[in-house]
Length: 299
Image (cartoon, rainbow, N blue to C red; front, side, top):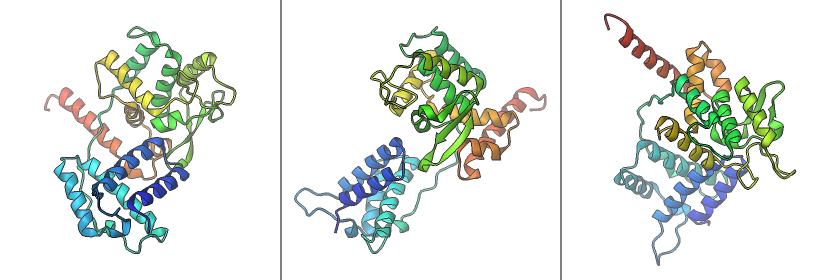
């Protein structure tokens, strides 16, 4: 029978085959590595997945709470473990799945912080002008910032764009989202201009089809995008909380505020469930309450 680690390796290979993003693979890999290490004792036999019963899994879960991890982190780790057990059962490796009996901690609904349209555009314009800091790949960085905000795409979707995925003449972008599902999103005019300006300076080996490249001429990674977004946000706005997903939140919220319907926004974002998109209505209601409190004489 396979050990815990062997079961994990097989599951991660399956995730890769399904087209999981590097971000998902990295997080799940880290969580599952910690899970395997928890049950390994020096000098003792290497544990197998079928050796883990409900009592042991509850002991592991209790250890997460002892480390004062956030509910969101605990839920993510629990989801990874459940996925391994489910996959192993489907493969006939184990006969029972005790992970289904683990209780999932509830998380309080959180309204995402959303940049205003003014702050978002000021951030991008400041990078474009070079007033705050002059970067060697300014055209590339402005182009990916415009796409993050103008198309509302995830950072994994951004770095996965190939040259053939973007049609600047018709203004459409083909995006590969979670689970390698494809969708088409319109490109804002400013993003079209920014990508054109970047392509005029883009140099790469003929075989390299990635749109965005790093300094070595290879595909730009999501970690580098995160670092750059944070750097620009600190330099321009003094805000270290801004990340690539902040532009996705801004995109959805600003569309909703300007009259777009939820179903359309759901399609543009690539959400499977409408309930995922509905959190942006809470943001709009929060903004509406602030306007009321600030403006109404009886507030």
